Image (cartoon, one colour):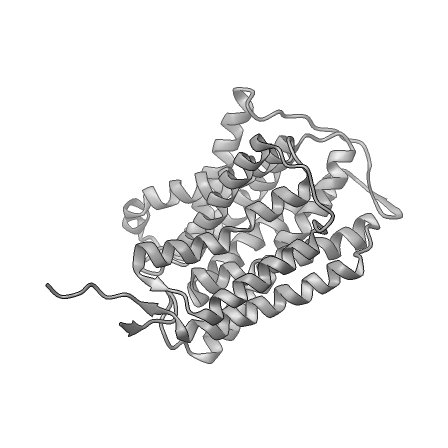
Length: 322
């Protein structure tokens, strides 16, 4: 056996790791804002499909020029990675969001989100089975702490009724989320992070638009005022923030984090999105977190630290010579 920290280099430079953690934190916070913002739009008459499509579409418009600039005329790189970009757009962008919103049509938001965020565990299993990167005991302990923290953050200790259809959609969303972490962390294809984000958002918005045209994804919009806590805002304000902050910024920083941290660690830091979601629900929707949820947030943080510390104990299983 030979020691291997992650799908990233075994010994990462401290500044690169620190920058990666900052990118991952920014991505988690940005993604975490989306739920509270979308809730106000849904209450104002928007459908989930229309909200997601506008969100991803705005992000595509914002990131596309940056992606073209990042390519620096290397269109051959884009052609070589066309399949990767399409896969990223369909699974990590359109698929994950469409499946998640389909899940919450059949079950409570909390259980659906918890099932989707088993993605980090799926990433660990994939790296183990596909690349022989066997997690060490500290990594497994960190994963367990993070999972327990999510249960507390989502306040599922009282039990929840699960729909088999909803569970199936949530598991499909988990596949999309795991694909996001794995593809984002790939540094071997030569594709700049901004180009991957731009391509994925364009493919994702196109796919969502087609789903809307054929009637699979209901499209309903409204120009009514949107209410948050004790204030009201014009309908287009949360849409712009959703597109620019919770999609454009979130995907770009998420890919940058994955390139620096590897898919395993980046996926576990992304669990902080759930904690951020609770905080934003408190600030924007007056949904005050309970003490048990705050405890869960601390456990998620402890789990992320455990995964990071456990990277040094991850081993690659070498084939036995014949």
